Length: 446
Image: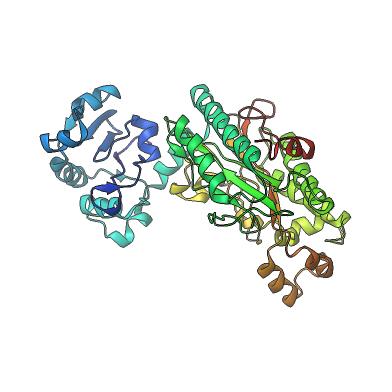
């Protein structure tokens, strides 16, 4: 990219229930990446032809300072990130119009917040309904190329916040026992995330109903014989994120049935770590992982036929309707605000249209510096099973009679964060228990 100007918006405060009671502020990740400023009310402009940067914003008034304390000026903020020119927000629209009149291209990213969508419409004259469609594909692809490859400093931040994620999961495992509540465990994990960073990287998923993939309900009391699925991560002060999932028995001891399914998922997780390396499409790793699931489920009599073919055509999606993983970085699903296909796919590898495979968020060729999640799972979703059985869908691969014996099973997912290295990959952070013996040795010890 070498023509036109780039406009990057900071996020604004968002009211929780009235204007002055706001949610925890979270800056736009692209703004953080380029400027490192976690404050609302700023707009950055890059002139691609001259190579200069500008920061538009307004200094806080005494009315603000009474409530907030002394605040840096916009000029001081600009100096921190190497920007020499600052202007008030009131000058921004005229600046954009002048650039448009001169025939310059205005590059911007697709806004995911309505207030920024309205603001961009006001600045550019593009209708609100067309703003996202008019976002710069050239800019999106350029930034994806930059942010996908993590620097040594970024990896260091990710390792640190992964260690916080390990502490969160370890605490939940230790505190887990029959009769306690999901809410207590979720709250304990969030407390650790807040004590070591900005809090959780996404709302905690912690439930005995693990068959619901993103279950944010924490209302249940833990019961003997149930599995507890915990999908949690933390966000660092630098805004980098971690994302782990562990599943374990509430009682501290797997039943034979639970152990059999767990070992299949663990095998897929571990073989992903072996297979993930530079030059390999992550779609191929995903396909291998679901083939491992098909082999294990066939051995148990839940599936039948040729496992490789069952995986290829999407029959395994009854048990794992999601993809193997996604990019992780400044966002827990890194850069997906640009559009999943720009981040996880490219001109050589396109998203599958087959149910299950289509949910894979990253299928493109892995490169050194990528950080991706490795999260296979097996779930028994009664509603999905009912629909498929009525339709006799993949009846040649699925033993529905046997599957019906698992309707109250729940779900199992095991997730780690992988850094792709020059020759393979490594799991970020300190080791987090995941073998059957490790899980059974730690659950309920506090």
